[in-house]
Image 1 (cartoon, rainbow, N blue to C red):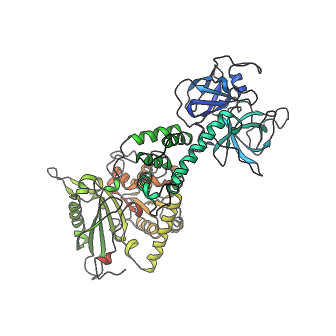
Image 2 (cartoon, helix red, strand yellow):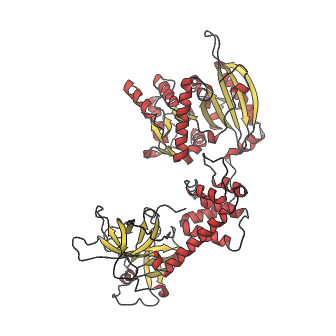
Image 3 (cartoon, helix red, strand yellow):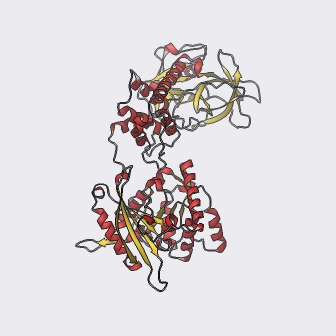
Length: 610
């Protein structure tokens, strides 16, 4: 899997400097701390004439992307005036960054789109020129002509020599820029030449080793049955909500699937984690395969990724948070006398953690609004005594009818001994709310809502991220409410942060619109407009910042993060006296892959029909 696109991540490129720090060109960082550049760039750095050979030993100043200047010695055996190529070796530690990923110039009937990042005088960070490789040309054997995009303002000028030519589609360096055509005013800097990687023996050897290592890894994986490495795949998928349940045919199929996913929470590519997990299980057979995977990693990973992968392979894996059991409490409305108190049939289940959860039904009883809190707390007390809850904690899922969602269940709790201070369950447990109607109401209108929810969930599964909609704290007019209904119908939305307390008419309507348009995650504060505005400000960086985009990793972490937020230790910079109470934050969370679903109520209540 390629590292971040070389068009943007330039940690593999270096600056070649004179002793006093003047940048004369660039170079590409190779595995082992080597640097490839142009011979004439080395001459310029050493202030030599065009025909002079560098003295032995020659030393050049190299500036790396981490801002450091390093000394590099010349490898005389790789000096090539005919190709205008030189190879240096860094004297001190390999810099943090990516060894370049090399590729071959693709052949075909059309010009190949490329880009080059160079360092013209006066532009410290450099400039990027866009171009096309159009065919053979130039004054040296093996050179290719590069025509600079005339619609793009950046030409090739001094400071571009020795820099890597990046293929836009491959995301790999396919050559080194060597020179430009001069004297064709106004065309100066619009035509240049490059040496392809495969024309330089030193680079070709590296490219061939890279290709052979990758081919060997892929060949071995293609002959390995997926069932033999399923546990390694599960480790690589750690923290993902969209874990595929179907089997892959071979380990190679699983590897290619992982290569297309975003990195894990530590920024490590999941396909690389997979290979390390396979190796850790002793499944590599055959002489040299372990060394091959090392070469494959070093040729495809950034230095920081490589180091992180090695740290991960040596460290014990923390236990899966999914091992914490769940208590599911469902309050089902009971139809009855309209003049009597509202009643609910409360049913509970405890669900063991792990990949194959087991359900155990707890007590069920009919209660009123006034006795609902005490009933739920008794169920929580009983579930906390379970062995899994003692060792891993207890997660809470409350399935409530729409009329009860605005209740602040996170504030429910028992008084502590001695002090008598209530200890809210919202500070001790991960809590998510689910709407009873979304799960159990089979009315045709609710079927449409179920379909909308599935559309949002499928869009999230496909894109691995979703938009967040922030409802303004001043959304009160009829026009604003109609606009909200239209905005929340967007299938790319995964979350909505309400702008008012659902106990108010505005907040009640906002919650209703968000639910009936199928938004999977709905967050709100039970407080006034000023507190809600402050709450928005504190959680906005966590929920995507100015981009208003929520990554899958953050979606999966939301229940845990909100629990920490309620205790004041995560998400925003909330301090005491911030204008609202974090225990008044609630969340509807319909990401079923992250938690167990309650069973069908018809299994427990014969009178109930879907």
